[in-house]
Length: 198
Image (tube, rainbow, N blue to C red; front, side, top):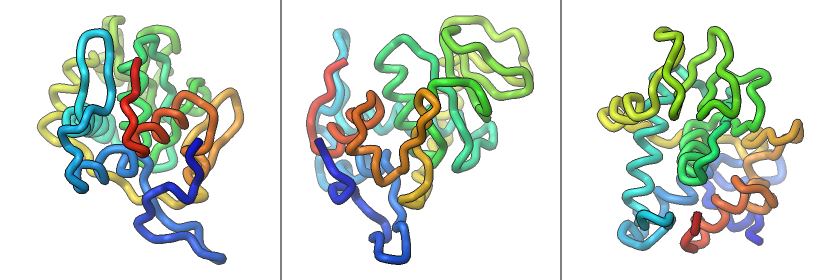
């Protein structure tokens, strides 16, 4: 399992500072910069995504999420049964410096196929269910299409900022790559150059 020292840091942590990083940058952007754009990164039964293609999908989703003024540190509830959509959602959330959650409690945004209920007055991207509130809810593919026109860049995140909130427990950004969760294993594997099979 990876350790926090394996992370790519924008500003290295020190005795009196947490450092800054971005977990999506560590997993994807850095690899494109290092000449690995065409390396396989993630495979499903239907398709294998290279690093560049996966980054394009993640950037588009993050762009759609950012259009709702999602800010760093805010909670994104992810309730998606499709492993590919979960992976994209986790990486897009981390790209924006937001917090990945498995509960809609306190969420500033909900990404769901119906397994987590949207929250009144909270933006939601819906994969499957038809939007019933045109102000706050958006159909997934429509959102992704809009996000492709303005993909989101990475956000600098402090190493001691919360990145995951799973089953009520929080995980700091610097610890995600060593955390035994779906999100932790995803970031660690991509950052290590492994192909993630879904």
